[in-house]
Every structure is written in structure tokens, then in C-alpha cells.
Length: 154
Image (cartoon, rainbow, N blue to C red):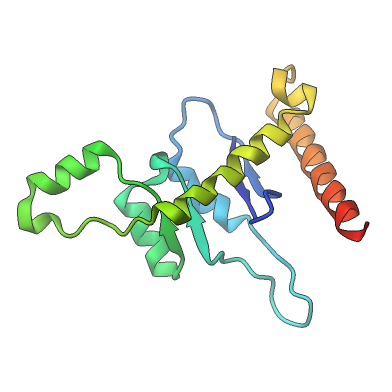
């Protein structure tokens, strides 16, 4: 399960993939599924200001794709990527910028996963079919959004 959340930790996009599928190829489709309606006229917003991700998404191709879209990206480099860049010497280029203070905000995603796991069917994974599991995820995400909206109005 791949999850994109907003700053409040509410799910904005959920993508289900097989367990053995790598994380990195699914980041861009996950981001494409985000669609935030504007208050006034205009197209929905589809591009986040920043993506904070773990090492699994830290591939140079991902960094380049996000750079072309004008999206700031914060993710630590994997050890093998650091070694490969150092082995190339001066041709390896500069290491990508990494701000540990910004990266500390990634725990919002982990907290959202924990909130979703409060729903018994999601935590135990009783559901065997992907369509049913996706439906449970959608219902749980809707409940999280409704709880937050009710707390904001109270």
C-alpha cells in the first residue's frame, strides 16, 4: 500500500500494489492521483509543493522527474547510491540536498498508517481481494476525513 497524505496526516491518494513490487516506480502514479479542488474557479491542484519520502523512493530518476515538475523532494540517499556516486569521483556530481529538519515531518505518513490500522479489517488483512481491501481503505480514509472535519468545526 502506497499512501500520500497532507500536512495534517489525512490520506489524499492510496495506491495498492502487489507485495513484491518495488516502491519507487509507484511514486509518480501516486502523485498523479492527487486532486485538490480550488475554492474559486480554475482547475484542481495536482502538484504538491514538496514530497517527503523514505529511502525506498530515493532513486535518481525519481529525483529528476520531480525536479522537472518543479516539486521539491526530501529523501535520504541510499548507501549504494552514495557509494556509486563516490566511485565515479568528480563525474559523480554533488550529493542531493537533504534537510533533516524537513525530513522529520515524514512521521505524518507513519501516523496516518497507524490511524488506518485502527480499523480491524485493515490491520488484520482479512480481505483477500484487492478490490475489497481498496474499498475498506476508502471507507477508513473517509472516516478519518470526517473525524477531522468534525473536530475542526467543534
